Length: 226
Image 1 (tube, one colour):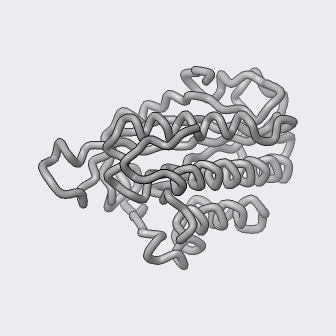
Image 2: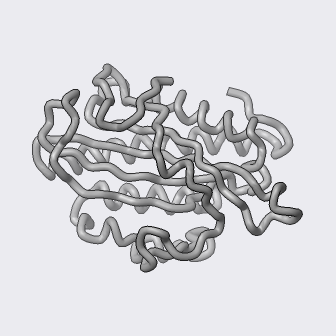
């Protein structure tokens, strides 16, 4: 897995790019379920498993981009991720629209970026370092293998610390981690950026479906095999 300190240091390659992404926010402990967003109190935690209808109405960052297919693809990703066929669930997401490209490694004029945080639906698995290590490695491997001709999208993998407040026991038994997938797409203009973002989201969907399938094939008390 490649190691870069920031997304703008990404280098081009002949595959869908995947990075071990160092995000300063990953050092800040989080809680699941969380309540208000620290950066914006208007942001709330929604249990999309219990209320999937909120996926299309509660994600503020995507509202103004609703005319692009990428937005619908992301909604469908969240609906699947939090639906009955998934062994995972989402915890948070964010998106910043098309802005000036600050990378010297990519020739496109614009870029967009965002994140999707997820965890094992069986919360106890998120307290196992072996299970978390398997999750990030399996996800990175699947990203490397998918869509080898695609140059203008990238995914970064980060592990963040979480306290799972609904797990029984003392606080030390509630400490765990989750997987944050950061994503980027590039283009000469806004439509091209969003087209490449749609392709990135489709790839992420296929990757997470593959990883989830492997998790569901394995009992909860063992580490899934590659």
